[in-house]
Length: 172
Image (cartoon, rainbow, N blue to C red; front, side):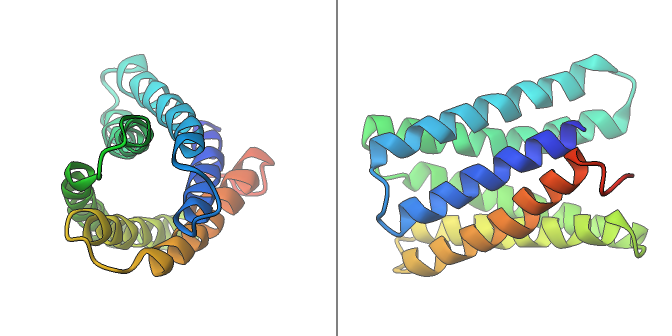
């Protein structure tokens, strides 16, 4: 259920960030959801890491969750501080490479169940965070494309799976 909770709010933050990238939400206003979801994800990650310190799968999930939690917190801080986000962009490159490695590693456990979706997620997130790197660190003119891809990822890697897990439509 923790995964469902986290994914639901990741879907929300990616969706709203996509709308923000389209210029429909102000910088200061977008900081609210990023800080909320970043904090929720960070607390969830800490729980995963410290609740059962002998559970390597839980520690791994917590460690990877912190990568994304920190991104959302950093976006929120950037908007409040009115900075350009280039440092965040370089961090996004690190997250993108890490997510690609996790995605590649997850291929070995592919089956027709939830693991297929999980592998898709890691590659989708790797590409999205690479787009954030290109947008923020390299100043590429791809904001509109990144906005639409953020919304796509929000719906298909966060919102829908989050709801399905919370409603017990998916079990694993």
